[in-house]
Image (cartoon, rainbow, N blue to C red; front, top):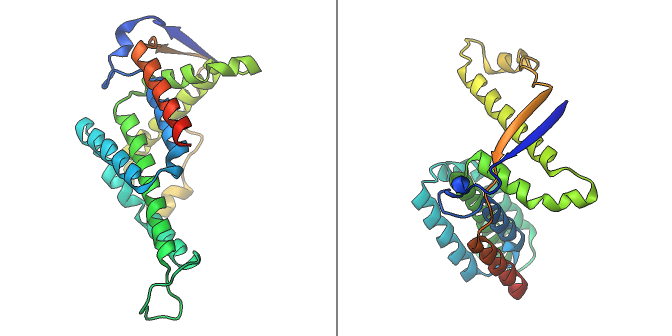
Length: 230
């Protein structure tokens, strides 16, 4: 099966009018740097970053973020218990059991939960401010250096786009199915081969915006901050 990525409008300004005026590659680059460096941030830096991300989510309407965090409550609770009871340190006094949590464990759990929440907030902000086509264009721009080791950025981007498209189509199809059978029966009778095969040659058209001066400046500032605070 062959995948072709047709690049349209390489120097067209139409695709630059995204919701916050930044190139999608710049936003993806900022998210990757944040995820890579968030482990070394102090409490005041985490609070400042959280305030920025929360303001962005409120402004751009990240309505699914709260429900996402709520679905992860059991993971957060498990992390808290593991850190609290498995991390050596000063035990919390007057605990009604022989095994007590430690202050260091609770502090470590809160820090890890805060970091995970901030990364999820960054991902949500990226999604609500970018269309799928914009994200694919940003990924394509960032993986251009892969050409020097013999890999095709266009082929990778096309496969990723088709995979996401198939997942969306499959979820929409499943949501429309209304049957009287039980959940287990639906799982056992699921026809995984019902999806229509893709065409042998499928072309995906992406408008690639030009990087502006502001994007290069922002990338340079982010990279400089990483170097300074590492």
